[in-house]
Length: 65
Ligand code: F3S
Image 1: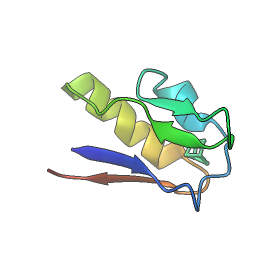
Image 2 (image 1 turned 45 degrees about the vertical axis):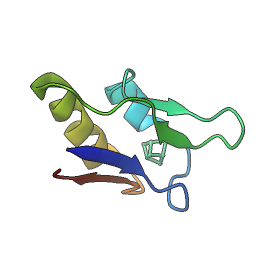
Image 3 (image 1 turned 90 degrees about the vertical axis):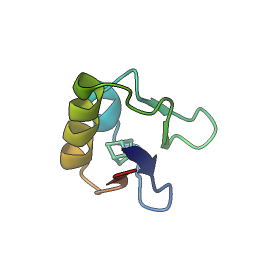
C-alpha cells in the first residue's frame, strides 16, 4: 500500500489527521495535508483507508504496491 495526498485537491479540512494522526500531518507552510509515514501494519492500513473514505475532498489516494 502507498498513500498519497494530492495538494491540488486538499483543502486542509484535517479529517485525515483526526482519523490517523500518526500517518498524516498538516504542512505549516501551506496548511495542507501530507503523508508523514506510510502504513506498516493492518491497523495502520485500516486507518489510512478510513481517512481516505472520510476526506471531504477525496484528496487521498491509496495504491497497492
Ligand atoms: Fe486535506 Fe482531506 Fe486531510 S482535505 S487535510 S486530505 S481530510
